[in-house]
Structure formats: structure tokens, C-alpha cells
Image 1 (cartoon, each protein chain N blue to C red):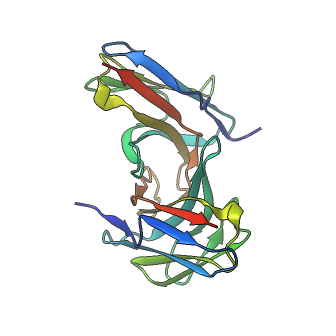
Image 2 (cartoon, rainbow over the protein chains, first blue to last red):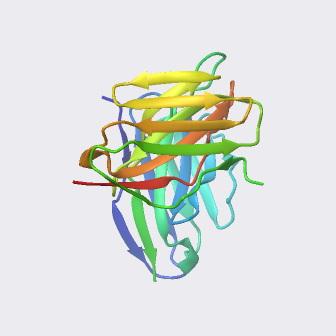
Amino acid sequence: DVKVTQSSRYLVKRTGEKVFLECVQDMDHENMFWYRQDPGLGLRLIYFSYDVKMKEKGDIPEGYSVSREKKERFSLILESASTNQTSMYLCASSPSAGGGWYNEQFFGPGTRLTVL
Amino acid sequence: QKEVEQDPGPLSVPEGAIVSLNCTYSNSAFQYFMWYRQYSRKGPELLMYTYSSGNKEDGRFTAQVDKSSKYISLFIRDSQPSDSATYLCAMSENGNNRLAFGKGNQVVVIP
């Protein structure tokens, strides 16, 4: 059974704190993604990685950074948390897209982050 | 204009009704079309996918793609309270690792 796990379901942090969100997948997928999900705005891509130590900015990378030191693990870092980063954060993974293959993304359960 | 448009308005239907959801898109290079279902406090899960144009049926669910109109639909027949969830459309170009998502529709099926 495919699995994407996220380190915390709920997290409360204070403004200015450094925050680490961890994601681990056990499917040997090349691609990993970080999204945030907000009411009325849907899923927005923050960063993604298509290989170890590789990363690409998504649509809203400002205020975030990522780290991928091992294939199975992708970390999202909020260098200095702000209240507008209060959100649901979802991690996903997928195999590398090849010709003729749709790239289903498998999602973790999400981390509800509140920044006070 | 956003790549994928999905009216995020909530939808309440009585049990047994047909649920109709749709998305429009602007990128003619999209080849793969997916519907994800997301239950409350869970991550999205793939419900159905379709390649290029046409229909696909899986039990009570039917996905339709009309590439000429850049329009996709999901129909749920004989809706059940267990179908209450948020439904997100997603699509991608051939060989592209990224998915473009709609905002999602919250569906509530009332017993």
C-alpha cells in the first residue's frame, strides 16, 4: 500500500520561528511536491523536487525553502514564520512522468499549521 | 486567466441525486485529466483519470472530457452520504511532472 507520511497533523508556532515540515514516501518516487491549501484558493504549489538535491520553485515559493537530501524525504522550511503562512500543508509524490503515462500524485494527510 | 477554472461553490444534494461537477481550462496541451476526492481532514486521492477526449465510467462515477471545448465533467449517479467530500479536477501535459489543479468543489449529500 502506497504511503506518504507527514511529520505532524497539527502544529502551532509563533511569528518569527523557524518551522520544519517533514514528508516521507515509501514508493521510491522521483518527484515530491509541497502544496498549501486555503479555502477559496485551492491547492497552490510551493516547491517541487524531481530528484535528490534538485528543486524547482512552484507558484508561491516566497517565504519558503526546501531540502531533499534523500530520495524518500522532502522537507519544507519556513525560515521565519508569519501569520499569513497559517494554512494546510500537503506533501505529495509521484513517479517521473514518461510518455504515455499519467502522473498520479499521492498525497499525505496534511499538516495544519497555525502561526500566532 | 487561470489555467484551470473550477467554480468552488459548495453543492448540497439529496441522497440519490445526480451530482454534476465541471472544470474548464485554457492550456490546449493538457492530455491527462484527473479527478481527486478529498475527505475532510485528509489528503486528496485519485478518483478517476482520462486520457485525451472521451468518457470513462467506473461504477457510479463518469468522467467526460471535451477537448474541443476545453471542458471536463464528473458525474456521480445515485449519490450517497459517503460521497460527501471536496472534488478537485487536475490535468497535465504529456511528460510534465506538474499537475494543474482546480480550486475544488465541496459536495454534501444529505440523507
